[in-house]
Image (cartoon, rainbow, N blue to C red):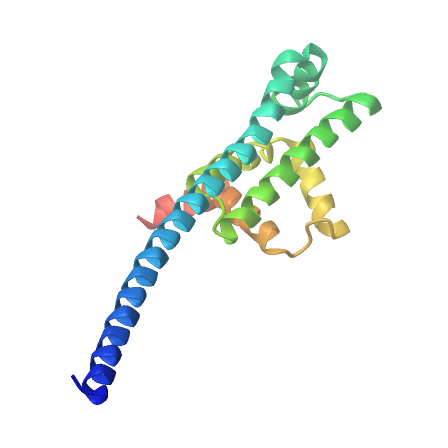
Length: 177
C-alpha cells in the first residue's frame, strides 16, 4: 500500500468520524432542546400556580378573617358606608387584587402563563368593579397614573365592558336584532 492510498483511507476515516460526530451532536442538541422545552413547561406551570396562589391567598384572607369578610360584604353587596379604617382595609385588599391581576396580565404577554389563568383574574376584577367603592378606586388609580392608560388598564376596561355591558347598550343591541 502506498502512502497516497494510506492518505486517502485516513481522509475517508476522518470524514466518517466527522459525520459521526455531527450526527451525535445533532442527537445531543435534539435531546437538549427537548429538555429545555420540558423545563420551560414546568416553569410555566409553576408560574401559573404561584400566580393563582396569590389569587387564592386573597380569597382565603376573606374566608378566615371574619372582620375582613364583613367589610367585603358591606362593600360588595350592601354598599353601606364604611368607617375610614374599613375603607383603608378594603381598598388595600382591592389594590393587592389589582396588582396580582396586573402580574398575571404581564405574564400572559410574556408567554409565562396561559389565558385560562388570566380569565379567572379578568372575571374577578370585573366583578369587583360592579361595586361602587371598587369602581371609584379603579378610576382614581387610573387618573393618578398607577395604572393610567397602560395596556393593563385598557384590558381591564375592555373585559369589564364585555362581561358587564351597560343596560343602555344592552337595550340598544336587543332593539337592533
